[in-house]
Image 1 (tube, rainbow, N blue to C red):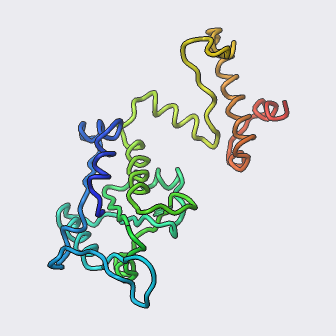
Image 2: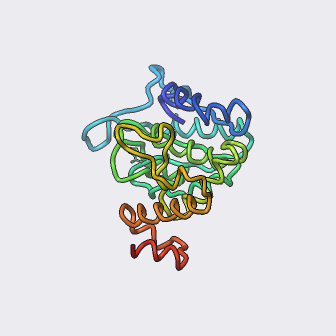
Image 3: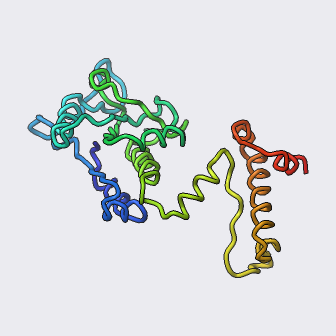
Length: 234
Ligand code: ADE
């Protein structure tokens, strides 16, 4: 639910998500809130009561838009509202959302949305991080992307496996492709060896080292073996 469907459609038509939609692995529709205005000039926003900067999105078009979606699909989707005031999105929440049959995402724009429609619809308020964007569209696309890639058949088996083994509280190890030497920089020897056990051990070590250096907070949840802990002390 947005005032900028073109912005969303262009992103959702490309790459992995575009392919998944074409293959029927996920259905995503963009709905223009402006189509539900009852204003004769098709306005969807107005000045804030009490004064102040910017414009506020009026409650009626949003409410009617959500109800039209409910009628259309014959169910009440779980409603998300993208706002920096929401709870920060995590991979755990993404996994839970990916279990739901229907999700609607409300994108705010301008200075915000009339509080009464928030009270009426009781959405789950989600932030994508502690910074402020001009609207909820980019955050909504992030939510749609992160949920879609968790759905069966959207990623290849290989990609799914990578996800399971590497976002398990550890950061990814560094990756390399051809050529073996570039700008005087060489691919680590072990990766050219063809020795799978050594490659696996090196990658595990690199993941742990990176996580320790960049995101020590994540190590609290990581399941580390005795050998893994040895890497940390190296
Ligand atoms: N709208 C504007 N900024 C946002 C953010 N950080 N997260 C979610 N929605 C937003």
